[in-house]
Every structure is written in C-alpha cells, then in structure tokens.
Length: 285
Image (cartoon, one colour):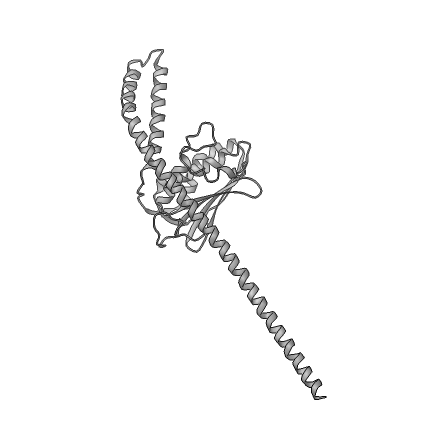
C-alpha cells in the first residue's frame, strides 16, 4: 500500500513537472518567434539603409559629373542664347521670326535642364519655416486640376492641416513631381488617392495611383539621375524630389501596390524631432 502511495505521488510530481516544462517550452517558443521576427525586421531595416547609402553614393558620383558637364556646356550656351536673342529681334515681323523664336525656346529648355542638373549636383539649403501641408497639397492639385479632369481621374484626398517645417516652394516642387507622375501613369483614368499616415516621430504624405505599377527591376534605379521610363523624360524629376526631401531631413519611399498601381510616400520628421541630414537614419517607420 505504501509503495502504491509513493508511486502515485511520483506520478503526480512527474505530471506537474511535465506541465511546467510544457508551459516553459511554450514561453520559450514565443520568445524564439519574437526574436526571429525582430531579426527579420532588423535585417530589413539594415538592407533599407544599405540601399539608401548606395543610392547616395550614386547620386554623389553623378552629381559631380553633372556639375562638370554643366560648367562645360553653360559657357557656349550663354553665347548662343545672346546671338539667338539678337537674331530674334532682327527677324521680328518677318517670315523667319517663328524659326528664331523656336531657337530661343529650345535654348531656354536646355537652360532649364542644366538648372535641374545643378539642383541635384549641389546640396540645397532650404529656408525653413512653418508650412501647412494641406495648403501646399491643395495648391499643387489646383494646378493639375485641368489634366486630372481631362483624363477622367477621380481624386480622393484626406490631408489634415498638419504643420511641418520646410521650404514652401521646394516642397511644392516635390509635390508637383510626385502628383504629376501619378496622373501621367493613368492616361485612361483611375483613382488618385492622397492621404496621410502618422508614426512615432514622422509624418507621411502618401500618393497612390492606379497605373501599371512600378517595375520591380526599376525600383532601385528610379531615383537615379537621368533614369526615366518616359520617352521624353529627362530622368531628373524624382532625383530632385529625393534631394529636396533629404534637405528637409526626410525621404521618399516608393512601392508597387498589391492590386494595381504604385504608392509614393513622403516622410517628414515631426516638428521638434531631432534629426541629421539623411533623414531615414533617424526616422522610424
């Protein structure tokens, strides 16, 4: 009888120990899953930082080359522009006046391209002040309104009156570039969504289109200077937008949507958040 009691007690002890081990195993498994997820998240962040660093190196190299090219082209172009203006004045009112004006227009276009090249070649120092992001978005959309209507695009927007620190004109240049790209990829119509997202220390403006979506092969090259999928594109628009966002201690992220189209997000640090140039090293997304 005594042996039976002892055996029973041993069995209960073993059962309790088994349950304790089972609970401990579950906790350990949860911990392993959590640590695995953390490692994957850190690896994803590390890859993003590495990609950003590589992109910056490419921009620096291309910027130095562009500055050198602009310097070489600007001098003779100024002479051509001067002679073109003189020729245009001399031919005013004649049958060749339109041809002279065409030359002047072409030179102005070249000058604009060179100005854009210098913009990304030399770091810009924005004049920072409080900017109502809602107003900047509204003004940009107002300019694009005729094009949006002609293409039959439905506009959906949800942009609260968030105040960010920035240079109004430079930010408008970024917004115009991103919004115009979204409109251009929907020649047959679609929905254009403009909305905001908020994180711990950042504020993001998202522009979502229903175009064909970004080609995966072009994802890493799209912010490189002179890269463009458009027949008549200079390939400087997104590069300049990226540069302007860096000057505001922010950055741009682009992704292909699961269903259709693409989404561009402009990340701004919240007012009062300390940051260094390069933005995404400090912002948590």
